[in-house]
Amino acid sequence: MVLLSAPRWLRSRLTDRFWRVQEVLKYARHFRGRKNRCYKLAVRSVRRAFVKSTKARREKKRFLRALWITRIEAASLEHGLKYPAFISNLLKSQVELNRKVIADLAIYEPKTFKSLAALAQRRRQEGFLAALGDGKEPEGIFSRIVHHY
Amino acid sequence: VAKTSLTSPPWPEVKLPDPVEEAKYHAEVVQKVNKMIAMGQYGRLFAVVHFASKQWKITSEDLIMMDNVLEAECGDRIRMEKVLLVGADDFTLIGRPLLGKDLVRVEATVIEKTESWPKINMRFWKRHNYQRKKIIVNPQTVLRINTIEIFPCLS
Image (tube, rainbow over all chains, first blue to last red; front, side, top):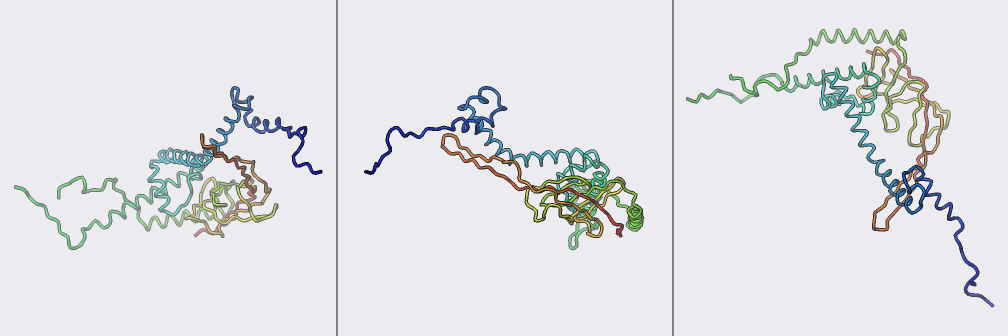
């Protein structure tokens, strides 16, 4: 005869509950308070920790770029240039170094940074002269002074 | 004409040095640097190299780790061609934007190709019964920069 349902003495019992719990607790061992020991509290903390680390990986890039910019600004002010002037003139002279490398140069290679600042300053002055032009008035326009009496 | 706030530009007046004299001075400096490179009067060279879509400031004998696969076996020598800047103690050569291949030579060797530590990517919306967990393992390559050489072909 064919038995269609399993008899009642055959049960499926969980045998590796310990290891399943350890998998979560191992990430919580360095936390403070009961959440490093108690599974129910640890699950919530570990979940939040993972989510925060995922979001932080995206914000780390923004944070580091702001740090580099602050450092470059400080270094260029030591040489008498502001950050927007420095960066824009470096780009206009076709020097394509990124902010990470310029910040490293400002820390470890001060002479090189000084030469970059001098290059940017010179390009800035050439830009001013080019903006002034000849100093003549455009054709077809005359200017006169009006006297109000 | 009366002086107003717009007669003169807001920046202080600048005078550039004489172009002829400047060209002479530039040629002198270039010759001096060329001689220094030819005599070998420089200590440790550093270079800024564009590699794996990142810029690295490197010297000889240092290690670089990139977060991707390189199609070269372990122990292969690689020449890095996009050099943006080379410098020593007394002079720097700045490329606009790159330096010539006949001027600088940067050699590196592939040391190891491994995988990164397992990074956990988790998304969770509270009160919506939504959570996704993904383990990301990136392939990594470690390079050792062997030498940076410069040749005296400035003009």
